[in-house]
Length: 373
Image 1 (cartoon, rainbow, N blue to C red):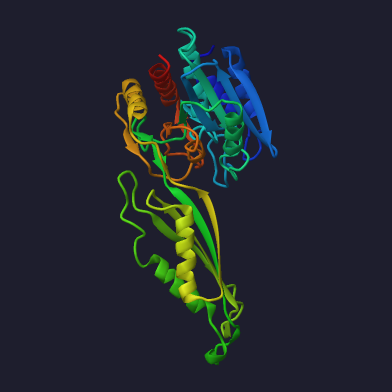
Image 2 (image 1 turned 180 degrees about the vertical axis):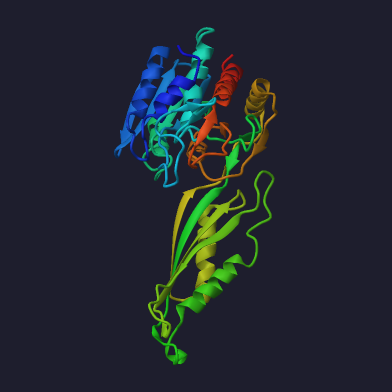
């Protein structure tokens, strides 16, 4: 039982598990968990490798959740091999060091440290997917379905996403905004620009529709969430000439929304608003996740106190940032997020100081002691 997260973090980083490839990462993880006494279930859905491992068969049941897949290294130059797991001057480099193979190694090290004192007073599990950085359709969602069918839903779950802006212990996330993407297509009547009465310019209609969508804030925020945000990401016509009114115009927008809205209510508002400015319009909506909140209470306070005791920093509660797999877990049980400092995630030279990695393992050990004394 190795209580140091560094060797496992290096082994995981040396697996080039660019989503949706696993590249042996979950083999490495399974090999680290079995000697600790975990029963490991390898769950493959539509080619995506997932893992659920549990130690113990009674409650309370505490679960760590995360992902072994990573984004590509990108085209920027790296100081070291992005899949080399190199330590230089006390810093571990590699794609996934921060997001989030480092946290997974800290999960396992914390379990080893906790088990060194004896069997847990309940059950510990790990829900690890290979599909978080990708489509997120055959990973955590499918594993949770399997867990529900098998009676494996935990009492509390902690996701190891990097949550801290600058210092370990600053932030525990207890919710996330929802995310909606809409593709707008406005149809018009093509014609010569010199004869506008013979045309119906879809660009004009699209511009008016987008102005109506952005002219006022969606809301002023709520108790735990910042105001919702609508951002236009593309406007496209593809017109090859300057004297032609095009037949159609398109745009794409994204809404990050708080708990004052649902994906369904926003989709209806989008369609109604666009229809006022364009009779011939299509609005295709994709909702990647609803907003969720784990209300502050006894369990969240237990988590905060454990993190504070280990790091010397009392974390504030936050709901900012993008989406994570916690949005799926929230449908089944209370969930929060706490992980490394996120300054280098998805960047070239992604890295974590070895001391911070070990401090995170100690924090996770304190969390286990708080939930499974």
